[in-house]
Length: 442
Image 1 (tube, rainbow, N blue to C red):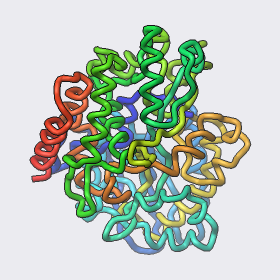
Image 2: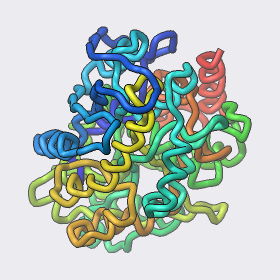
Image 3: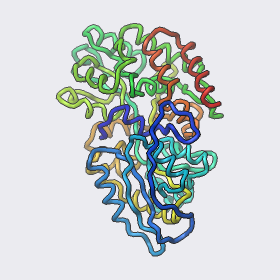
């Protein structure tokens, strides 16, 4: 499992600072050179694959080895490998793509492909996916995952690894409080109340500097209740009865003292420290939380069950990272042939425990290594089927406006901090968020 901070995880999904876009943060330019190309057939120019540090120090070593072992058919280009750091990655990509010196194939931020597709820079993956229907890869993707990549013009990218949000609990602290693992919102309140009697917080999370988990979890509660931030027309639609009910519920948790009063200011490191200190008995985070907390406490940390809301629904949020192809390539056939090879040979990135996020393919999840990991098994079995994306409730397919409106943006940070501060009501907070998102879309 990936051991990652929430702040780092954000940069792995959000694609801010794109040329001409509105960004929540200003990133320094970091131009990256390379050779251009065309979209024709065979080419003597190599195909450039850019990938990110998705895991531990062994990830990119193995990933490079897999890439350079690629032996293309006659007339198709070979592949080169370049690791792109997360620091300033948005400007690295936007500068390179704008100057036609970028990669033919890359990963990157989870909304990056949709931004570049809107700019006309992406080679859609429809033909590639059609070819995968005959070799088994297409049917190997987890249920509903390909749908997240689909736009009105085609598939902007191919799912690569999953960054998820789920509940966690300390089994010893729940046992000491005399409560079972909750399966509904009502039961969850009872768990929080029991933990509070022992001086433990049951709504453990943070929304401080660089920590976007707070906004993720509030959105997850909306999705859990049948709501979310966008309608079917891809318009912001925050002020709904489903969302108001969800946020009033969260405000009740806050006002009852089930949330740490300093949660709005907590970084990922602060949150992990509270788990280590056994001040958090139940909370919400990424799949790598226990690995990040470490020590003896981590052995007591277990992924919880999805909660059923008053509307009778289950739901949560995840962020499907992806690999994309660009129009600027020595050979489009070459790009597709390389990705076919890569997806057939990338399982080692998971089975050798390089720290990459959850796998997109059922065949990787079914390997003995991953089946021995209770976190992976639990999330893929119980959580993955009920996950939605930022686009919920209107759909699962991502779109380009998400990056500069809700993915790590200031309005979402302000929203999360206002709810966790407890000095607002749901309708006021949601209305403020709606107005801010509409402003960014203009």
